[in-house]
Image 1 (cartoon, rainbow, N blue to C red):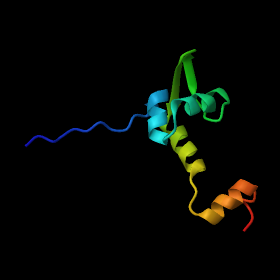
Image 2 (cartoon, rainbow, N blue to C red):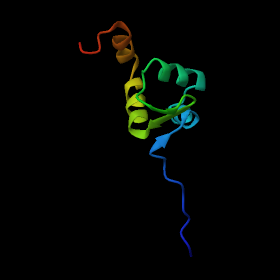
Image 3 (tube, one colour):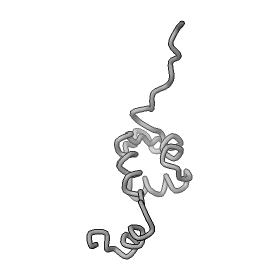
Image 4 (cartoon, rainbow, N blue to C red):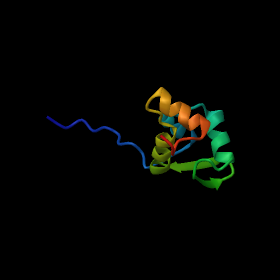
Length: 81
C-alpha cells in the first residue's frame, strides 16, 4: 500500500499563509509588517515573505498562559513576580 504524502508546513509564508498560521486578519498582518513588528523579506513592493521561524517567534511572544500573567504583561511587569 503506498504511503499517503502530506504537505509539510512551508519554510516561508506569504501574507495570507502567515495570517492563517498565526490567527490574525490580513489587515493586522500588513500593519505588523509595515511597522516592522515581524521580520520579513519584501522581494517586490506587494510581495512579503515571512519565515516560519519568525512566525513561530511572533506566536510565542503573543502567548499568555493565565490571567495573572496577562495582567503582568499588560502593566509592564512581566519581569517581576
